[in-house]
Length: 360
Image (cartoon, rainbow, N blue to C red):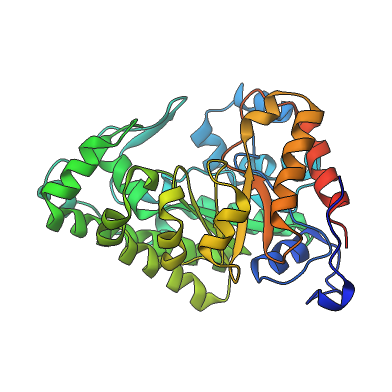
């Protein structure tokens, strides 16, 4: 099933060069690229043979903190799948290390050894210069940009303030983040003090990434789906708005990502971001109407489809593209990260099919 073609007279940018970075940034700017751009969250690893070979030799933090290795990990999916964006191989927890948060990355997720439990813990958080706390990330971005030679977009990443605060308080991944939310509700002043500090660090972190070569920034607010709209507006919105406003000042586009956040789409749009990334729990066309068609949208194939067969994946792809309706501003992605057992051939075929189906 082929998409309806947009007549040439209605395409606002019919002469966009056919490079990954050009089509990616065109979509972020709500212009019409030559084809729909596509990339995958967690593409730098997991389903790549080269990733597993390196993981047998090095732990995750060593791979992240060694710029040459980080660059190799970041480039693998670009070379293997032909995606339009290279997302830095990094973890969203990294800016917290310079604050004095002691964590390790385990299979189940980040584990913090000194979680926040009191006002004294919040007061003790350091605010180090980002250039001093994560120099390896900035060097990796420079190397990746040099390797890409302007062919694909460089995607910088950071955790959002709510998600990072949840990890800092819980100390580990949680089903409902009840410890963090109970502190938020029962000690709002302490919560706001913590969010002020985290927001300052995240803002400095993403601005440094842009200076180092990131073309676009994605903010991962992975756990905002645990909140209702009124709580989001009170405890999260002002801080997220501040981060996106700072990014906007640089001229770089930003993507705002959340999971399980179907009840918060209007709030997410208000918080900011040129593109709102949605998961599979809401239909893409419905989500786009809710965030406003003047914004871009990213998503939203169910990652589980990648554990099936090509006809099933293709049908899911066609449904997403049908709902996007060839409008400017769509970036094709999964609703979340690539499953560990995903077949690399399916990822490669999906990238090729999205480009071919949407070619203008």
